Length: 432
Image (cartoon, helix red, strand yellow):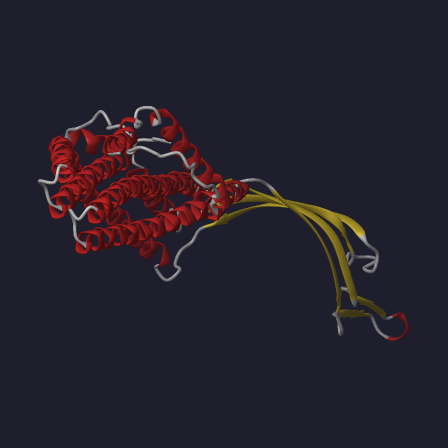
C-alpha cells in the first residue's frame, strides 16, 4: 500500500513536464479570451474611436465652411423721403417694411498661424494615449488572469497532497485496527489516527473552497473555465536577470512607462496649443443670393453677392492665454516628475522580484532534498510500525513531515513562478 502511495505522489510531480506546453497554451488562451470578454476593453476601444473622431474634428477647423440662410424681418416705421410741395410732392420709402433674403455663404481661413495644426497635434496625442491605455489594461488583465491561473494550480496540487496524506492515514488506520484486534494496539491509537484524518479532511475542504472561488473569479474575468487537468508552474524566466537590464526593458516596453510618456506628450501638445491662444487669423469670405430693399423697387428681390477679407487680431482677453500657458507648463513639469517617481518604484519592485527568484530557486533545491529525506524516514517508520517496534506517534510524525516537505516545495514552486511572472510584467514582456 505504502509503495503505491509513494508512486502516486511521485507521478503528481513528475507529470509536470508532460503538461508544460498544454498549460502554457491554456494560459495564453484564457488571457486573450479575457481581452474580448471583459466589458472594460469595449469601453477602451470606444475611447480610441472617440479620439479618432476628435482628430477629424480638429482637422475640420482648417477646411472651408459653407452655409445657407434665409431671413425675414418686418419693420415699422421705416425711413421715408418727401420731395417737393403740393400736388407735385414725391413720397417714397428708402427701405421696405418686409425685408427678406436667401444667401449662400462661404468662408475659409487663409492663415491661422498654427492654431489648427496645434489642435490636431493635441488630438493625435490623445489618440496615442488611448491606444497605449488599452495595452496597459491588457497587461494588468494578463497579470490578473495569470495570477488566478497559478493560484488554481497551487490549490489543485495542495489538494492532491492532502489526498495522498489522507490515503496514507486511512491505510495506517486499517493497519492499526488489525493490530487492535490482535491486541498489539489500543483504542486510543485508532481514535488518534481518525482525529488526524478529520483534520486533514477539513484542510482539504478549506482548500477546495478557495479553489472554487478562484474558478468563479476566472470565469468572471475571462468567461471561461480552466481545464480539469493539473496546471504547472512552468512560467519561463525572462532573459534579463540584471536590475539595470530589466529596468531598461521596462522603460522601452512596459505600458505603464509608455502611458506616462504619452501623458507627457499630451501635456506638451496642450502647451503648444495654449501658446496659439493669442494669435491672429486671416480669413476670406464670400456670399451670393437674393434679397430685397434695393431701389428703385425696394420690394423686389434682386440677385446679390459679396466678398471680403477679415483680419482678427486678439488684443486683450483678461490675460487668459498667458495664464493657460503657465498652467500647461506646470502640467508638463508634473508629468515629468511623475516619470521620476515611476522609475524609482520600478527599480524597487524589480530588485525585490529578482531577490524572490533567487531565494525561491535556492529554497527549492533544499526542499527537494527534504522531501527525499522525509519520505525515507516515513518508509522506516512504516516498517518499524508494522514490525511492532515503532509507535503510531512515530508514524504520524513521519507522515506529517512528508506533508510539510511537499507543501513547502509547492509553496516555493508557486512563489518562484509568481516572481518570474512579476518580472515579466515589470519588464513589459508580452507573455500572452
